[in-house]
Structure formats: structure tokens, C-alpha cells
Length: 129
Image (tube, rainbow, N blue to C red; front, side, top):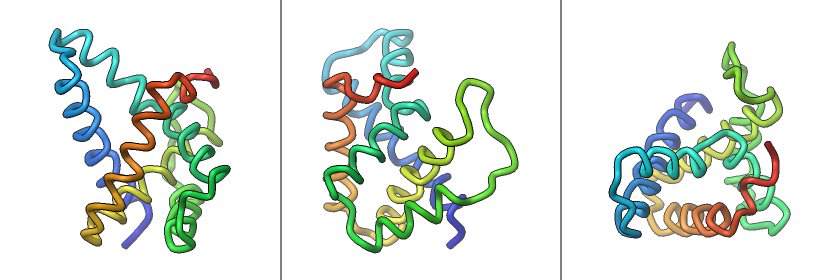
């Protein structure tokens, strides 16, 4: 499957897990939910998580290959609120999650997502801005 298609699915899957996490944490006000969710799903945060995954060598060889394919995919545009390198890394992050979801590797998917959520909650995902 094309890396941008994997990223498209990974974006949705990650956002669903983040929303479930925030609701379980008791963050109920809609504006607070949205503002908090953005901290998790922003390109900056996802790029920081993917960098951390690589530093900690958390990805398998297959996941690393998927990440690189996603990072190197040409999307045609970059959002105004981020730079190209950050956006591409976040696309790689999403591609890995999309791949795991679509290949029905639920346990592995959840392991990486929960690591990502913990990383962002500790504030590590907000260092770049």
C-alpha cells in the first residue's frame, strides 16, 4: 500500500486512541478536549515521538522501512504551521500506525501508541515549536 494511504489511516487511528485516552482521563469540556488533543496529534509532537522511537530503537526493521517510506513520500503540500522536515517525520509516524492497524497487529499498534501518549504527556513532544 502507498505510504500516504498508510499515513491517512494512521492519522485516524492515532486520533481515535488519543480521544479515548482524553475521555478516560476525565477531560470532558469540548474546547479542552480539542486543545489537549492537538498537543498529541500535531506534526511537531508526532515528529518528536518518531525521533524518540528511533533513538530508543523501538521500531522493528519492517516498521523502520515503513517509517522511511512515509517520511520520504511526496504529499504535494505542507501545512503552514510546520516545516517540511517535521511534516515528513509526522507522515512517517502515521504510516507506521496505519501499517500496523491494516496488518491487524493490534498489540504492537497499541504498544507504540501508548508509548507515544506517555511521551507527549511527559512534555517531551512539545520541545520543538
